[in-house]
Image 1 (cartoon, rainbow, N blue to C red):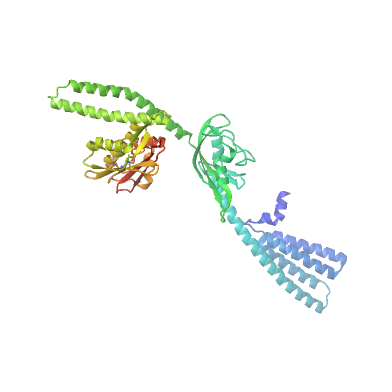
Image 2: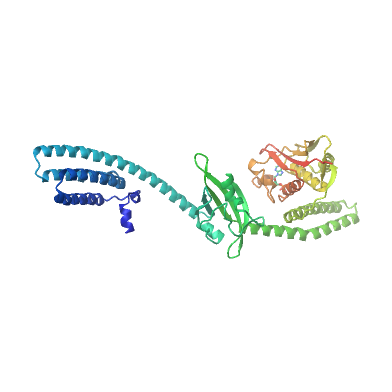
Length: 485
Ligand code: ADP
């Protein structure tokens, strides 16, 4: 029954590709038979003529819209043929026949024009609907196949689309009737707290029109397993710039989080395990050196080399410990007032000896007092200068400057070395990140120095950044708030 109704429904026929001539033929033939029967009973030529014109016009309109130009033309032709049959099947006078044919020709032209216009309109709509349907199907297939969860809402936050991967990640279907910004999805936590519905990434995209990038959340599946989710959300605008929808891409990052945790645990364990033996080793080397006969120059030199290498290991272990403490929030900071310019001067003095024939120039513009952890700031300056030395060729100049700004002190370390490409400039401050592309320039290190420096400066409410161009040297900057009484 439903299929039969669909067959009669012109809208349901839109987009259908196979065309059958039978339906318009049957419709028009039925009309002719009904008309013949009614005429046989009534014999009222005039009333029946008007009735026939209206009924056939209505049917031609319907068939043109339903089946396009072809349907309209078939209907029009059958109607015209029937008119001719009607005129010649009765005993009309020649005059009546001539005027009947004239009327039939006029009506035929009218019907065909109507069939043409309506059919053309229908076919245009058909093409547009086809195109939209195809596009939608394509998009939905892509969304369904994506390896990440996808959630799309309308402008009011009501769920429009979600894919199978999302169900897999959430361990459940999205609740029916769920409205973003109004309902809370149970089990979703950001920083350990359940989030207000209006502050979820998708709601933010929808309400504020802003994209939310890489928001990490903890999610407890209905069966109890906890997973880490990374969510990206963005509003979708129409041509007028109004928000018409919003989309979220959700990925399960539990595995990489667990990998990171294993890495943290390893750093933590390794640094603690290495600390004690290397400290004792260093002490024993000192004792040995003291007891050594300096006259045996060769052995004494070897002893000194061992001490130097042990110092390098100790520095690495100390960096590892710092990274581990930073990860666990256990790195504590002292606070004292001191002159930053003097600390910079002292550090440069100490480091003059480690250069590969580079010249370190110091440029101090005024006294700058800060309140900070002196040792940790010393660590940052040392790291920036040793990097400048490590990553620039012999004979170049390294300029270390300190200047006082409105509320802060600005320290910069400028070198004429290999420089850093734009896309790497943020990454080098990440934990254990090293630029590995040009291995010929590879220097020793584990990629911890800049990460530790950034964390130290952040903890002091300062900022650290680099300005550089590949091949043209780099300038590293950091600021610290000036001391206020
Ligand atoms: P490390 O020097 O131990 O590798 P860092 O965290 O100090 O680790 O530096 C991270 C990376 O940044 C380095 O591996 C290096 O590629 C790059 N880098 C740091 N300072 C400079 C510099 N002055 N010039 C060019 N590259 C640098």
